[in-house]
Length: 367
Image 1 (cartoon, rainbow, N blue to C red):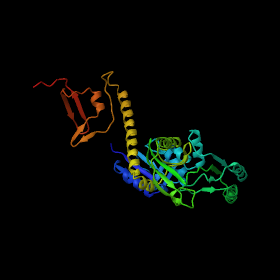
Image 2: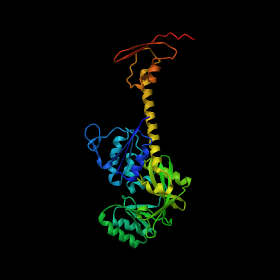
Image 3: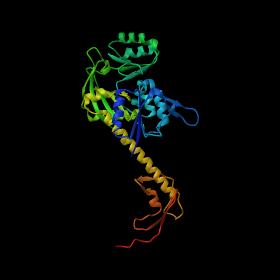
Image 4: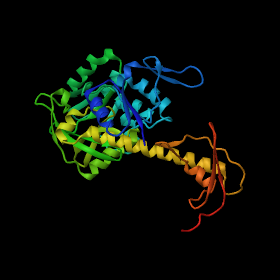
């Protein structure tokens, strides 16, 4: 089955690796820069444009990007998701790119996480901070790579941070600090399983274990419960491919974040797993499965319309022809509808634009 795919992204190294791996499975793989995507939502049907022209038809589209493109990615996926396989749902781009919405979705699905509070005003946030045990973590709803995450070891420092940040006029997320020795876990989910895991450790002067903040990483063997939890998170936010960040709590793992556009370099190097290959194979298998179901539904619908078993009336079928060199193979639908048998004799009348095949109902003589 020949299948066409595209990866829509900002053109990162991770996206290039994924596209290269996809070329092993798909007959055609295009790398499209999200910056060149436009969406025309006038008229009867929304239209996706790439460099000003209608985007090609694909069987699979893997769209990803930073929170700055969340609305565009959500709109694009809403338009395309009924036409091809897309591993990230439209809603996931809103939920996963907003830490507040992520925590709300996790809470809905009863997924364990550190105790979390939200406040939109400085006075309200300070009242929350008065009740907290220190240290605490303070976050902005948006931000990647550890950006927008702050550490406060006392009420005084947390209050000072709030005063300094008041000019930004953003809601604040205040979260209890879980002591893990400056480490966290990352589980990379593809489909219904975790394909790779690693443990990240913060640098001596950092509370954040994120690699972009100077942290280091090493291979981590995740237990079954942690893997199942990571898969639950991916399902909760509507993403079949994502990275889930967790902390080792006293009573088990706690989820702190979900990333639907994670980098592959560090997880690949650390785990020794070709994550791009895992993603590509999964995309192909899911696309093939989806297309196979569509073909079967189409075949069943045509066979029902033909209703060939009830009467001998003429049936009309519009289809393509399968060529094998200079030979033409008749579709299975035709052979069933006409009750063709290899033991029967047929009269074939060929014209320049048509072929008539008539069964003579004379059995071949046995040798």
